Length: 214
Image 1 (cartoon, rainbow, N blue to C red):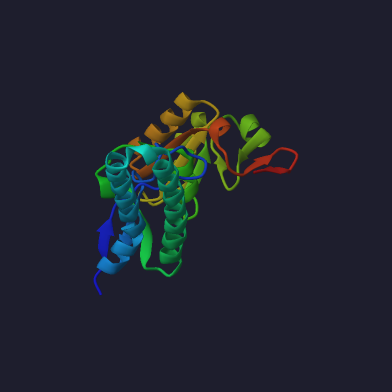
Image 2: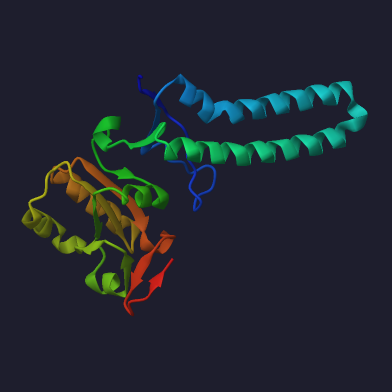
């Protein structure tokens, strides 16, 4: 049984449809049947659209009914398609694989969306906030460590990390975040990402008063 590769767009619940995962993730399927099952309802949606357009020409007096039926069928297909894809992933017939920077020939750091960063954090990685320590103490992403930009070069040397370590950088200020990511690249790290400011982070954070915000 051979493994084939397929690239798809995967939208997160915190993103709109134009913000997709295909820059950081790729989906692989185990065989042609899995590929067909992954896309079969998409094919069905195209058929529904084609039939609806054809019927509009043949039976223009029923255009409103045809439109309503087509919309209902599209919604049903969308729902069934999502359930089918979830089942394919649960049964390991389709795999989500993260692409590191070197896999995409990225030589510097990469700017990604918060949802991309959140997905990467599910695997082993280092998350660094480069804001001043007071900002980190006030509110920070769960699991992140504080290394202010001013001491990042010195502190990262002390950690003696593998240069292939996946590092995610964020801050209170967007420019500071980019500077931190570039510094790490200059240090020789090959898999560095910056995802902007914590103010745009829609997931779990830790607050100074030890309460959590979803």
